[in-house]
Image 1 (cartoon, rainbow, N blue to C red):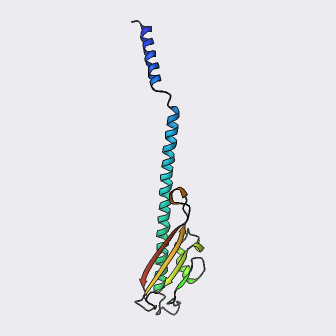
Image 2: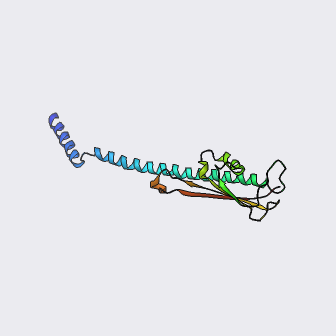
Image 3: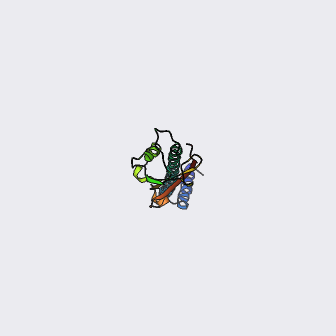
Amino acid sequence: MNRSEIEIMKLSRMSRQRQSFPNRRGVAVVEGAVVLASLFVVLFGMLDLSLLVLESNTLAEAARRLCRTAVVHGLMASPQMTVWGPTTVSGTAGDGTEYAQALNPELVTFILTNVNYVINWPDGGNQPGNRVQVTASYQYQPMMPLILGSSPIPVTVATTMQVAH
């Protein structure tokens, strides 16, 4: 076999390989689009869920702060402090009351008028040893309606402590 016959055989082998594997350039684009779309849905879904958990933890810390403030405003509170309780108190974090001011330092990223609180004395009094219960609630609006739905998710936390003085 001479050199030209070898080159012809190589070319015919290459053309047979091309016929058995048709052009696949468009397939890579479609596969990439499907994989990237799935990756972004998972990534943003994780981000949305983590923001929900962050806001829930922040709300819980704000409720603990309000409850700690309420336990030192009991019946035996010092004269420069106002006595809180034993009647149930409710409002929003944006209402400007002394209760809201105890709640607000933790709620930096929240819309204060959307955060509700209830302070309750389940034992019926604000004497030392009685309990104070604070419940705080908020509506979390998901960023990705595809993952968590489009309606707000209610977040409610409660904490209970004993009156100190």
